[in-house]
Structure formats: structure tokens, C-alpha cells
Length: 349
Image (tube, rainbow, N blue to C red; front, side, top):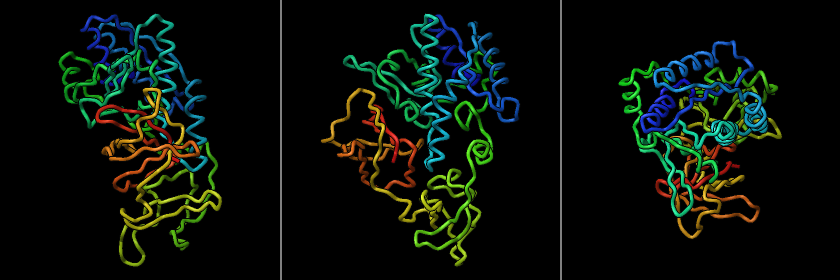
């Protein structure tokens, strides 16, 4: 129970269905817990308030060390290498469905439930991860690294509900957090000025911003602080030639410390028809049939894009798309789907 409305309603629904429910509040970040961005104290108060209303016990656990070792250290290594990681995905596989799951099993629980918008289905002895009923809130993208053992113990009570219905249920049952806004920002760290936050942990190495042709158009603060497709915060405005087209980050030259920028949202440098990925994780335990097409997302909230998946000789997996994808970003995840079934995914290289 995070203190948010989704996990609160999940607990309420399970209690109504006759389960014996124990709330568990996780604290996973301590580095700057006194500053204005960390809301863990208020979140714990909110979680305790709704647990009291629902009539269930609430336990608080601290996984800050596990978070630092398993998620945050990886997050920093990836940024330092010039890639853009997705900590929410690692958070789910390493903290919520590993550290938390292990703790729950030690308490004698039969299953863990989350406020994620997704579904689990058992079919022919295999557990499948499915998209949520509310596609605008679907979080299967963030859960694609879960394995059979984790899914066998997972429940998602909100899987078939719309977000508006969840808030209505919370309001009807007088849960104090029914109108609390959804959390955003880095998983368990919260919303904060990102460049300033990364600056505390990574050295700054300014360098030149260049066009693909090699023309210098500005200076960057350090390659770690930029991501492919980024438009804001470049400090070079519109076109000096009067075109006024905005600039976008299109690439990084790590060896020369150059940030490659282009003008125009649909510049060819921002469009890719294929990508390769490593660290592939298939939920079923085996790779999909390469003789047919699937769909994939290269970022959260993106529409499913038809593609063909094949295995490369170097061990990487190739995704070839029917239409060019915008701002495919190394370090982010590509996640494959067969209709509503999430097949798994990997890290874009």
C-alpha cells in the first residue's frame, strides 16, 4: 500500500471478496528524505488512514538498501553510459515482485496484490500477463520482466476497472485518499528537477552540440542529462535560418562527448524501422514463434506497432517495424505483445 488510491482500492476489493488482507507500506529511498520532494511520510499517513477505514492491519518495511543495490546503482550506471534506463521496470522485478514478495511469503501470505492496471491469466499451466481493461492506464509495459513464479503469486484487483471507477469506489467507501493525485517521477524517489538530482551522483562533462553534418550549434551540460527525442532544455531555440523548427536530441557520440541534435520532429535521424535488444525476458519462458508478426512498444503509452521479431547471430533480438518508430532510445525497453497478451521484452541497444 503506497498511500495512493489504486493500492487502497485493491485492498478494499480483496477484503470485500473475503480475503484476509494485510497492508504493507514500503519505504525504499532515504538519501534526501527530509527535502521537499520526498513524500514518504505523508504517504505512510495516507496508507495508515485507509487501512484503518478498510479495517486491515498495516506493516511498514524498509527496502532502501535493496533499492540502492538492485535498482539505483543500475540506474546511475546506465545514465553514465549515455543510455536512458527505465527504473520502474527494474523496481517491479527487483523490489515489488522480489524483495516485497519474499517478505510477504515469510509472513505466510498466499499471494501479493498490487494496484497496477494489468491482469494475470492461467492457461494450459502457464501464467500470462494481460493488458488492463483501461488501456489508457495499462501498466503491462512496466511488468514485462516478471517470470512464471512471480506471476503465479500476483493479483491485480484493478485489472478490469477504469481509473474513474476506482476513484468512485474510493469516494463511496470514504477512503481519505480518493482524490489524491497519481505519483509521477522516478520510482520511489518522486518528482524532482531531474538534472539537479542526477548532478549529485554523476560528474558533469560539458561538450559540443553538433548537427549530423558536424556543424556546432551549442554546448551541452553532460551527455548523461539528455535523452533521444528530448526537445526541452537544449537552450538553442528555433532555427537561426528563420525556419523556427525546434531542435531535438537525435544521438550521442560518447567517445567524442558530442550531443547530436536535429531540427524538426520528423527529421530522418529520429525515425527508425528496426532496433536490436538484449537481455530479452520472455514471460512464458521461451521466445515467440518467429514465423509470424507481433506488435511492440518502444516506450510507455505508445500505440502497439506491428513488427517482426527475429534472433540475431550475436544473441541480440531484432525488431523490424512496418512503420518507422520515433525516437527509439537505447536503455529503454521494447515490449512485445500478441493481442492483449504481453510476451516480454528487452533493453534497446
